[in-house]
Image 1 (cartoon, rainbow, N blue to C red):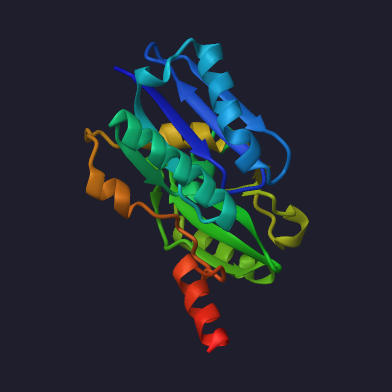
Image 2: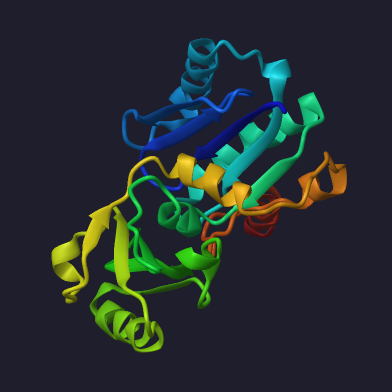
Length: 238
């Protein structure tokens, strides 16, 4: 069994978890807001050093693929794709909302609703069945924060025989308009480890899968690709 590295940069702060071959887990969460491009590699190297793990001893990589910050999602995925390709080890891209539900801060409730700040007075939300490996019970979506109470009511109506709780990332719970228990998320990279443990199937490195891996933006991306910018500049020049 080799070491596993999980990273989630879908929010303003970095969440990193490293599980050593003997099962010991080393974690980092924090850093300057929105500084992933400057600090992520340093935090990973520091965590590897603390655990006494060499990069060559990594066997599995996990990326929190979103939804979340466009820039943050691209930074973590680009970094992990480079590691995956260089080391020839598999990369798993998992839902950041599911990771929030499966994090150490998640409740003992049967159903966990995960929320993350989507800005523009909107939130990313998903609901997961903790009793069945955090299986999603509805499609992940983005909604105005003022509509969350309706979303929560629908989840509660269908959650017969179990309790429902909320785990949030960067969301002001007083704006949710619900009496459900609400807990701030922490260490969702550990949640990524928990999610992978629920999948009993093995994995191996695959270049086509690595090339196809992409962030889950959910909201339409407004940034232009290099090709799109070049075409726009060409049209403007003519």
